[in-house]
Each structure stands twice: as C-alpha cells, then as structure tokens.
Image (cartoon, rainbow, N blue to C red; front, top):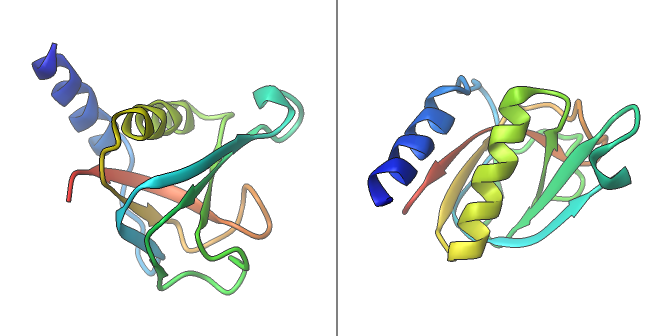
Length: 117
C-alpha cells in the first residue's frame, strides 16, 4: 500500500512541469480547501489555502496564502487528489506556482506540489 502511494506521488510530481519565476510555499500544511460550483461550470477551480509563507508570488496574487488549481485539466485533477490526501494525512507540502493567476484572479495558479519537508 505504501509503495503504491509513493508511486502515485512520484507520478503526480513528475506529470507537472516546474515553472520559472513562480511563487512557492514551502514547509506548509493545507489550512482550507474550497471548490467553486462543485467543480462544475465554465471555470471549475479548486482553491487551497496554506499555512506557510508564499514567497516570490506574482503581483496578481493578492491573497498571499492561496493557490488555485484548474479542474478542467488532468494535471489539475491529480493535484487536487494529492492535496486532499496530504491534507487528510497532515503531510507537509511545498507548492510551486506558475507565476500567474490564470484560474482565479487573486490567487497564483499551482504548477506542482512536492510532498514532504
């Protein structure tokens, strides 16, 4: 079971390319999870508020401790699964943003997630 979970985490991390000049929140835990329109509608998104400091964030990210995930993509769906699992287990995360706010105008879009400290 643990080996399968590690493989899932590795695939989730490798499936999403890193972004240059992006914000990040390291050594963080998930504080709140919000989804709009039950993940439906024209712009389904998943918002993650974290406890760590969001450094290097873009100017558009006016809510400094929040990242947005696009639920229209397979990568976004994998990110949501990873974030929910980490939240349920109380695992420490490092979240790397894209440097832009494409999904939610006031929150940096999540590029990828690293699990562990």
